[in-house]
Length: 231
Length: 355
Image (tube, rainbow over all chains, first blue to last red; front, side, top):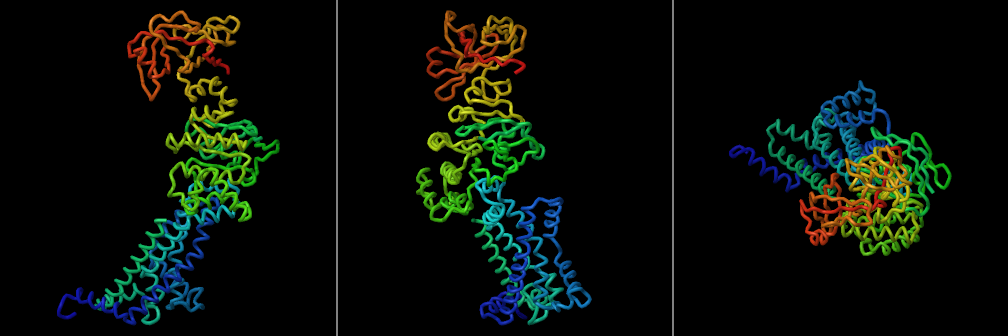
């Protein structure tokens, strides 16, 4: 790294770190996937039924709710991080849970971050089932519950695409996990926070290795998304 | 069987106003009207998908205004088929049976029978996205018939099909109506479809039912100028009755006198409706004829369309005649050709201004 181009050398070393399954790289990658997949799972459990509820029930202010959700797609991650930090810290109402600077706290933060996105995308996915189809289902004799279940089943690939996008946003964000997790080595360090730290420490090879893995995850999500959307 | 009693409902800026109609068991009932007139809303109101704000809907004499769609015994087929893309053809056809709790084995037998009957048994395991428009339409129809509806509701089922497939599908619908004795309500804006299929029909314009009755009566003797115009009567002429001798009236239309059968009294404003195929053209002096309206004119234009041709003739008023292309050639009709035009008094439908 001293004699040649630091980027090229970093890249070569990075590939070596990945190929040799460097323990630090593997540990950070597994933690990242665990936190973001768990957050996506919990966010889906909450957001998909809520999204369906918003779509199926007519109420005053429905449009405003959907617009607010769409606005929250771009919610700054550091804001979510700050709010979750305040709630989970000793001075906050949930301080007793002792989740600050733990993977659990990071899961909570990412869950909160992607819930609006998943809710909004669920509403959009269900809205993709046209009115005629809804009416046809009802007129064929389906009860309200059967109609709801059929529409959700029909929109399942669009809903899955929304979940994948949510996972993509969770694993790629750095603000919330940095604030809530604290980037503690061996405990809360994930791909994005590790890249930020190692880059600032001029440890390019590890940063590039982790960056390649993060890109690989993003690529994997994208491929999965294409496969789902092709259905 | 099903009756609308002064039904009104509003959907956004659109409203259905004071609609009353009766559809009897076994009717092939057409709802026709221009785009945006409210035909589909009316069809959906029959299905129970929109609840009227005023008026009543009766089924076999019992009020069902508030009855939900799943309890009305109807099935609805939209023009885009609305098939489930993630279900096979067999699962699509089975859907209505499944949600109605029909036993799996029984449903499977029913579906197999329907697939064979509609000639789509070889497509059972295919997905709708891989089917042609005609095949998709058959699947949609089989799915609707599977639930054995009292009333089958069809929303412009032929509009997305090519002409050859349309012909086949019309035959399917005729068979379904004849053999199953099914009551069918179809939304359309095609006069030809109404001619071929309808036993009764209603014309709806701007959310208001403007004509209703036996299909041949509505098509041949429309009740108003706007209905005549919508159902495609080629010659609609406004005039004034100048004399009436026991129902044999003389009507002045822009200086030309037409004879027609009506009770309209002298001085009354009327509208004459003449089908283009009731206008006969002759070259030379064809004035000695049983037709009461014979007049000289000049060909204005000849528009050929397949085996037929539409010939416009100016005889003081402009009239359109429909001839075979062969007749046009035999008579050597070109713009400027002098012709004698005749229309029987009995071929003229008179709309009185107060009707």
